[in-house]
Length: 266
Ligand code: KIV
Image 1: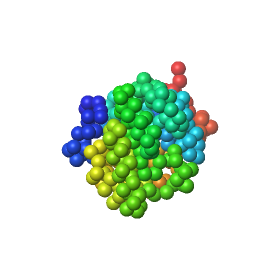
Image 2: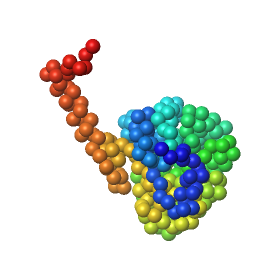
Image 3: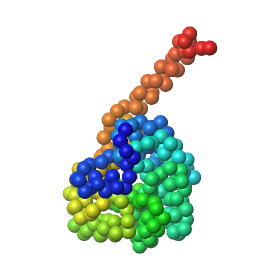
Image 4: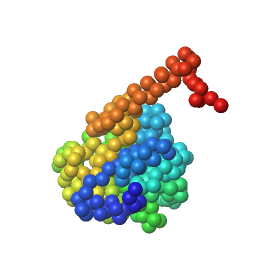
């Protein structure tokens, strides 16, 4: 397996115009296999609130839960860069608690954190985290933690004015020290303009092919989560059917006496 991916690897990808991949993971064994498959960045996304814990939005999860999932993923990963998505209210109230909460993830094995949005306060948080030695991934466009103020799952950056605003925000994030920026639910042509105006890589989450990288929620990729499927996600497998078939066969075997067999007993 190749060397550990770092902020320098990510910078070089952008410089050399090389695409890279980002997938979410929430547990040890999934993280291990995703890592072995050569994924560049593994994100403990706060999407886990929805796909792993059954909440309706990402708001329900807190720092203590993210810490448990961060430790589990970090223990499974050797090669990828591990990034923890900081949950709602974990960096919003004041800078000392933002540094403490983000630093806790680094102590558990994360190599950086992701924080959503743009404001003068967020720029200050980014600066302080980077000064502390914590790499930061930004997140613009549709930002799920702002679901209630954005008025729902809405595409962002559609008009010229809206794209220019995202470019302004992205440049400010870059200036503050982020090493990459997720662009979520932004039209492909807008994402192209944003990507071309930055020296840090953009990571598309439903923002099209011109971004420097692509991210998807692993449960969507594996065909495990089935409550809804975002338009931009691609299903590469049918884990839902596989889990159902295995559980059904086990159930049938127990009831018919086929499990356990001679080789499965002491
Ligand atoms: O929570 C998450 O998984 C995310 C990515 C999909 C970008 O924020």
